Length: 515
Image (cartoon, rainbow, N blue to C red; front, side):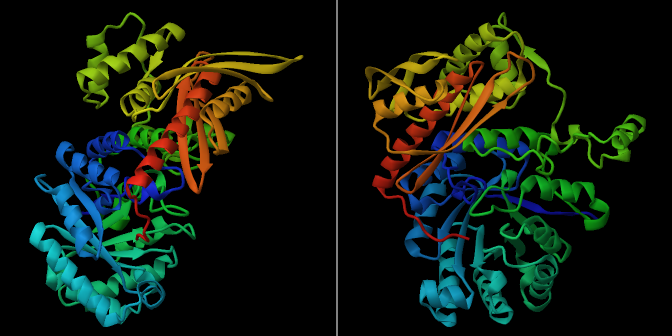
């Protein structure tokens, strides 16, 4: 009999801890709605206590996203749990996820607590969370480096206190599949009330074993896997959702387990998260990388032509990969545009449709064929815009083999038009230096990448940048058929994020150690 494994997506919480992956509320809401279409069971929408922005994201996702359970993280502290409930209250399907370390390393050096104090605190906070909501999850942080006997004591106590899910984190990516599978089996076998709760796992990828460890845990009896889209997250990242889901689906015969995920939505979800976070997917990434279904070997190509099963264990269509389909053109009207977006799963307000349609018409004048990927870019850029302090109005660039590149840029800064000119080593550099002088930014450009969204010489160029300023790293994204325009948009997107998150820092964003 096939067991159904719950998929707990933490892209919006742990995934956002990736350097440069910070998202605003509208971007989080867009990803959450796509995660609902993907069919995940639980969305960890954020850490409500950490900042007003995270609180608002959790609140809006809980109220506006239908289908999955919406969860907020909370440290094992009364104020955290109360704030999580305030963000979630009134929504139909909610969970509070609280955590406290159980490893002696953390208890001694970070929390300054004894084992008994930690156990008592965990029980009290689970009991408190249960007074607010019925669905409570507890995580013993750094479980993989904890004394197994003490870990089992804490797990038994928090289940008795009302935790319906107990998550076992490999917080620092320390364990290996055999060891972790044995730990899950020990918990299932030796904790008397373990069958009263779902045993979950949350693995980090520091040694490249997050997916392997999670699958070993499923084999040992775990009923929930915590993961992120594209495997993004703290340090080397988290368990990759698409790898877990397709691993279980492809080898159902071995694992005897599957998920409720609509796998045909995987590719679209992966692209959306990549665009919004600016984190480019490596070409050889399993499942969603550009080369995942590419075959260059003559022997492989010969086999595929005879029978696809010779060298493909999954069909590209199973994750939503199809040949680019022409969907719209410059003669398409607003009604057809709205309908096509709804077909793709985007339900937009009238204001959002109008803004996106204006961008679509401009793009249709520049290229003959508009593909689904083009529409996804329009939605991700136009609909998920934050309040922009700096807006690009126009620019001109002069460049050539015997001419120093020169840029004239017009920006709207805090509602005022400002024009400035400057030079650089190339046309993009000239634009960036001019914008930097106009905005007086002290940021440093860490990364600049260009990718074509679709094929053809008139394809939109997709530019991703990463900026760092005063210890904060952000990503920016821009797209246009003109690569310099795309570059300017990406740079300004990142600068506006720096301004946005700096203002949120002033409002009281707290940085804490998380699972």
